[in-house]
Length: 479
Image 1: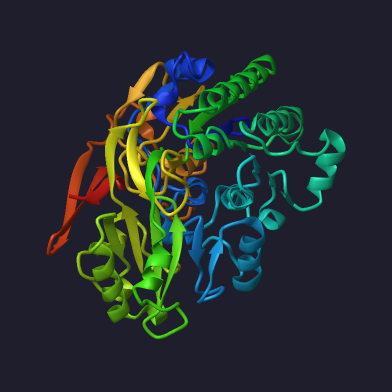
Image 2: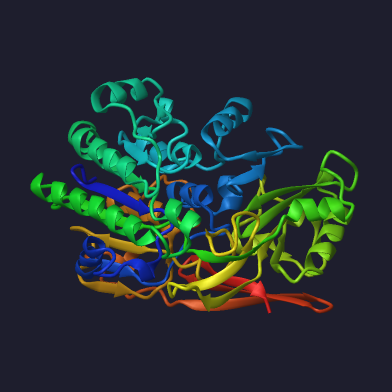
């Protein structure tokens, strides 16, 4: 087994491939030219952060790792309450049920092999928490402005680096401190086999100002400068020779067309709350909404599906097998969204490819935000394309991989590079062999499948790309 190999993951929250240009992000553009560009890279659906963070560290789809949304209902924790996927609530789920995620994380697997995973996140507390919920037993650490795992580490870091600066837009001051903690403490002193730096920009700024608008170019430039400083440190420390660096984003972006208060409209239409017979709970997730029906009742699910497809803003609609096959819906299992903690119905808002005033494609309705602001969560093809780059001694140079890849592939690929190929728990992702320097085999032959459902004037279609044993949702919409 390789003993001195290291992997570093850098995530730019909400970064789109089209934003990596020499003008906006020169350091990242140079990195892309020198290494491997995963030109057909995908997040998982729903295209929200905490879902994709969980998929990144488990290699599993949401149905299998059990975190269905940034807001969701967890029936084995509280069957009647929609909750936010934030650190205190996720910890409460672990305390009540014995586990936050239903699949082992990179940290869990590495810990079983005497290795460590350390993550630093400047986004939400929920995003940071899912990287290593079991730090007390798996080892490693999670570092966030509000907490750390293990818990005592927070005070130690505050004594050494000072308090975290307040969150502002762009969130550069926090990005800078996170990069400092990584290069002054985590890498030189802890020296974990895998480290992760999660940069909260450009996501925070684009939510507020719009995709590519207002302060977004500043956020992109300043996040890129932090990345450049990190690469310079690795170079000066002589670590580029044994560090494989993966750069990703968790989702793309859309511009909000309208805000749809789905739950309010449902109540006005006569649907009671979930604790009542025929009731339903609604969890808004930006460009999508999750629906949970009382007692998993198929008749209620049918009524909700019929109601949803009667609205023009309803795009794709999926259903868990526990409620059968409601009118117009496709199986959630098609895209890995069915499982023990999955919602009964999942709706993506309808979307289009119009350009906003800064030239970025993609408009969709959303459960929050205002028209013109940035949002994500839907099955838009512009949200289901994200950044995938890699560079290092184990990886090809100056290459472009057109084969479909995704966030679910990062965990199995990194484990493979560390020599951990046996005894690894089942994953939905695959090793991205075609990106590796020493892999002589041809890329897996990709193919595409489409799936349709209709009812009356409503018709939807999903497109899924396949490569080897893995699959990737390209888009889903009302057609």
